[in-house]
Image 1 (tube, one colour):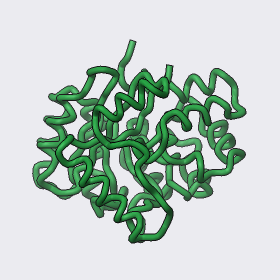
Image 2: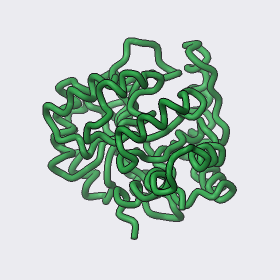
Image 3: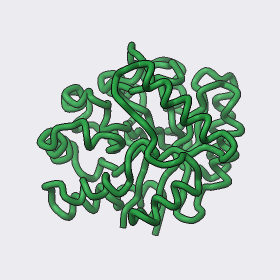
Length: 270
């Protein structure tokens, strides 16, 4: 079994335009090259899953404006739990009705939220974000952060491994999932600040950018029970990422933790 814990899709009518804009952002920053490998639609994701042996995928929407959360969360609830597709919700840390929105996300049956501090321009350890984390902990909701650098946004950064470590002064951290192995291209800082903490890490968009020895060291020292297989589809190929982790020089038990067991617990799959 394989569960991809980090994917992105958009409603059919805006998917093409949204991806084109994101690709333009990447070209403009010049940080790294980046193009979508599939269309960012529900049907394209399902086709990719079928072709690459992915049993389930988690969609992580992002509210980039304070007015977007209601529409985003309605779409998330509509697709959640059907045909191997699951979804978290989202909200913008600066929206006034943040507390009611989190309660609504819980009522909709969504198990967590996605925050993107770069696109939302809010620090991971800022007061607006911390109050969300505290509320999520009370509601039993998970919070996935985009962590580290982002190819589509220029510095300064708003979610570094050190900032994520700071959140542990306010919450337990076992409901926090730091994407991109805790901080994209900041993996020395991940080892310094996050390895050994309760914060979980996903593997989205890392396979071509991290030294294998460092990846294995992080898995072994942090614990395979706190690592989630993820691709960041449509930005990374699901099949190639799965093959990369299947071939990684770690034990079969650790591979099973990463590829599906940890995600099954979070998504409450039998």
